[in-house]
Length: 68
Image (cartoon, rainbow, N blue to C red; front, side, top):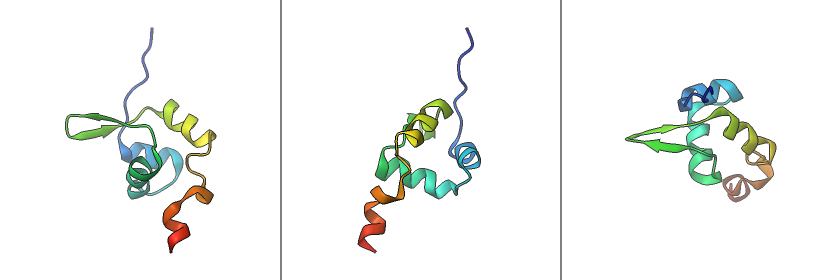
């Protein structure tokens, strides 16, 4: 059985084509799936992809954009 590797925020940012700061902001404000391992945040791309598919990265739900 092969397990999915844990990846960094930088790897997620490259996968999605967004800035690393955006990944951290989405984790904090929009519930992007992430797991804290010690002091580090790690991600599984399958969880991130599912989160995107279900609308997690949809700008119309961004409360910061609505307030600016």
